[in-house]
Image (cartoon, rainbow, N blue to C red; front, top):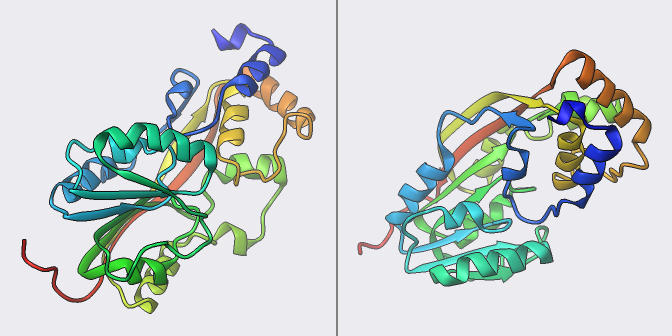
Length: 260
């Protein structure tokens, strides 16, 4: 049981665990998070099965895209972090999908109207004008995104109260406005607030190493005092509870896809 293990043991184990890819199986028995009600991976797979050309933006290690039973004849994924590029390539190439190394803050390296479906799970940022550009008329963008003040109970435990402009930076209403400004029609927008529980300090450390934008510059050494206090809090009071926020957005470029 993790509760009987020392702070040093739990932290060492979390630090030694690789953080590439978006496989969260390491957290089993150590942290939990409610899942959104819309079932993103299943819904994405349904759309992929009917597409001719699809792009998955910021694919991570390719795990979500690879979970789809059927991929379109032309399937491309982009990723900016080199360890994830290698991981996604190994996972997706056997499925016939191409992985393109592309920085997250750069224009998409594709021609206009190249894809009838663009997907993205938890993009760091959505460049709506680029999404609109690479979609064919009638094409769809389908994405699950991190919402405002996600897991901020944990973020603010380390960083203190954050300004409102940071807490509200991922407001889905802003996403709608930016999508429409890029010429897209938002056909679905759903939100969810989901309970998270961290059962030991190792789960907290690994989470902050893996999701690096939560506490920028996080290291065990820098936050050792706060980590030790949180370790004692979890041991004496039980799991540390936070709440993630997610939203699902589906937007279409006006027009009609060519018949197939």
